[in-house]
Image (cartoon, rainbow, N blue to C red; front, top):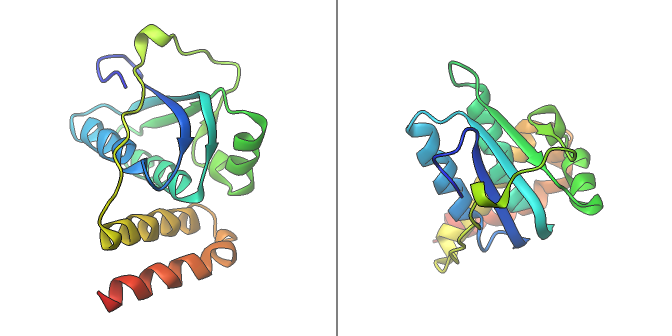
Length: 158
């Protein structure tokens, strides 16, 4: 991650999942709070993504759409499967997918991952991410209804 570049450049390496999406969410939130509104996320070294990670991306895109001036989020170098996931969930309507744009590795640093160890914190993160996916595209509600209900039940029972 490079907070000094314009746009802010982020490179994701390895599997992007619920285990490590908190890092990118915290980073993007901090950058937006600091007035940075344009982001490029490079997925060239990303082997795959889960729906929780995609929910964090959706939530960030939704937040950037509400800023004044309006911010932007560009996903670049998506492999075929990741591109399919982004389009199937309708995220391409919230952000820009540009597989022709290159992000110089000298302008980015790898996403440092942190593992969510607290089960309730993890459930809250998964719940929030999946609600963002539903907000991004109403058709996603049927896809993620069970995940949302399961996470809400875990939180309610805590």
